[in-house]
Picture 1: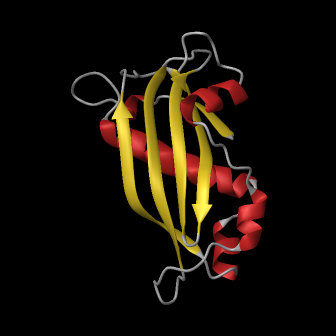
Picture 2: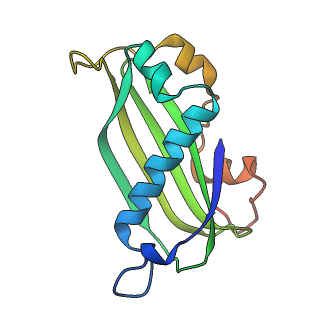
Amino acid sequence: MFIHTFEVPGSSIDGYGHVSNIEYLRWMQDGATAHTASEGWTLDRYRQSRAIWVVRRHSIDYLMPAYASDRLDLHTWIEWVRDCQSVRRYLLTREGDVRALARAETLWVCVDPESGRPKRVPEDFIQAFELVVGGEAEALRIVGKASDSAS
C-alpha cells in the first residue's frame, strides 16, 4: 500500500469549478510511478531488467468532486500479478476522510522495451510488493481509515 498526499493545484480545475477528470488519470499514473520507485523500481531499473509497464485499460469511478486547495490522499496498491499482467487499484479520499472521491483500477502489461512484446513480470518485482486483496474496504483498513460506514 502506498499513499501520496497532495494539495489540488488551481491548474487542475475545469470550467465547472472542480477537478478535471483527466487530472485523476494523471494522479493515478504519478502514484503508480512513485509507488514502484519507493520499492526500488525506478525507470533505470526497469530498463536494466528489460521490462517496462504499459497500460492496457483504465477504469475510473468518479464519486464526489474535489476542488482547488483540497488535501487529498491517493492510495494505490497492487492487487494481483499474473504472467505478464498486473492490476493496480486506486482510492482517492480527502485527507482524514474515509469517503471515496474516486476509485479506479489499471490493467498493466509488462513488455520488453526493445521488442514491445509482452513478457513475464520479473520475479524480483513480484517479491518487492505485498499484494493487497480485498478491495476498497481492505485498503481503508490497512491505512487506518476504516469505519462502520466504509465499504
